[in-house]
Image (tube, rainbow, N blue to C red; front, side, top):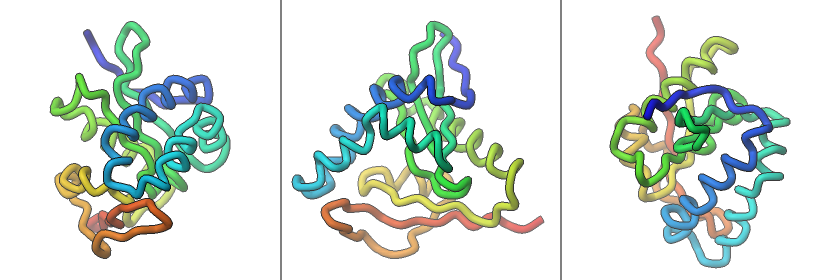
Length: 157
């Protein structure tokens, strides 16, 4: 079945939430403090995703021809990679890279971009290293959210 990557408007907020909430619980929450779990999962609720979309966040989804969402990327203020999730059944097939390239290209068409940032989950660092991101600092704990700040500096043409 074909998978298409496209911009996701607010009509996708529920589908995005339904994909990323269990993946966050499975992959991100175990590396954070238990006290932060509810805060983190609440930030993935459909109404929160809609709020993000109505402000300065842009989302793209990987959607099967039957309408099932199997991947999502969300960018804040064009240059901060905020969400990147791929359904377990579709991991290891290059879908996260396709989502990343789509979001990066989209941002570069609207603003002059010299770098991108991400606060990587501890167990996702390898994904961002493969995209060319580098650590800015070591592992940090911000009120229970444990992550790794990373940056990708683009080469000037």
